[in-house]
Amino acid sequence: MEAFKHYYFRKYFNYWIVLTLCIFFIPLSADTYLITGANGAIGEAVVKKLAKDHDLIMLSFNEERLSVLQKHLSDTYCHEYLHLCIDFNDTDCAKKLIEFLRDKQKQIHGVLIVTPRPNFGNNLLAERSNWEEMFQSGFYGPLSVLKATIPYINQHGKIVIIAGTSSVTYLPQYAGAAVLRRMWTTLVKGLAFQLGPQTLSINALSPGVILTPFHEERISKRAEENNRTYEEQLEIETAQIPLKHYTTLDEVCNSVQFLISNQSDGITGKNIVLDEGLSDSY
Ligand SMILES: NC(=O)c1ccc[n+]([C@@H]2O[C@H](COP(=O)([O-])OP(=O)(O)OC[C@H]3O[C@@H](n4cnc5c(N)ncnc54)[C@H](OP(=O)(O)O)[C@@H]3O)[C@@H](O)[C@H]2O)c1
Image: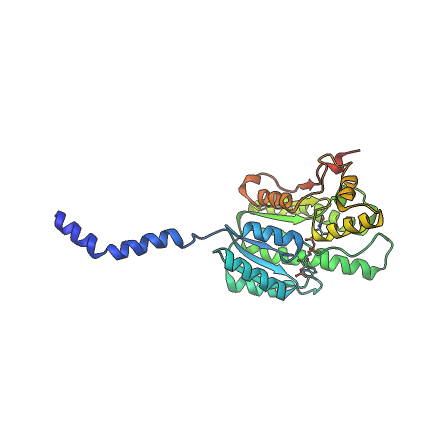
């Protein structure tokens, strides 16, 4: 009997090795997250954080940069990274995504909606066309993408919308954007009720100033105007912030990771303010 066992062990030894290697090296099926604005400062930071352990569907506007990002991820990690270019200014922008999702048949565990930066200014009595432009690219477009995605979201799936602190604080320079942010945070509250029976959670994350290249450039400009170094300007600007610094991309990623994970189970319909305590200071 022993000789019989040894014979078969030796005979199939190579197969055992291959099977063991497969178990260790073939990645197990991973959760999938869909992210819009994937090329942007916030989107790309989140994408790079999630790519290590998850499959991703990345949506953005610029095809070339999206392909470079996808290649970088595929060269660095071992999950599936799909991408699709989408223009939120196109009133029919979800059509492409509907076909894409039907074709891929991927179950989605979470969605992060990052909208384009609103370019509206502070004149609340602007022309109708200005409002329409902002609402199309900053609200209707991203909302139609979310709607197209919902049938593919798993039970207990999570949706996160990046809004901004102008949803809770009056910031004169972002007066137009504030209307948009409020639309999202109000929608989030309503959708929490509408999507709750499907076990889906939805929350808004409202960062204050994040140290992205966009804001770093603005700080540099103000430093130059005031004849200060970048560090001096930063220190003065953040003096009134309780945590004494602007929000970092890492902090944004951590909050997003929390909100799309089961660590945030039970939290829905909320607007989570990530501004180092500023909107609560007086
Ligand atoms: N940075 C901050 O401090 C901060 C704070 C609070 C809230 N926010 C808000 O968060 C959002 C993202 O900020 P961010 O700093 O990541 O901005 P960003 O770097 O300018 O990224 C914007 C993203 O939107 C995409 N986009 C632009 N136009 C588009 C269109 N027509 N259709 C589809 N996608 C389009 C861009 O795609 P491509 O790159 O492919 O062109 C890019 O991925 C903005 O709404 C911003 O106002 C930012």
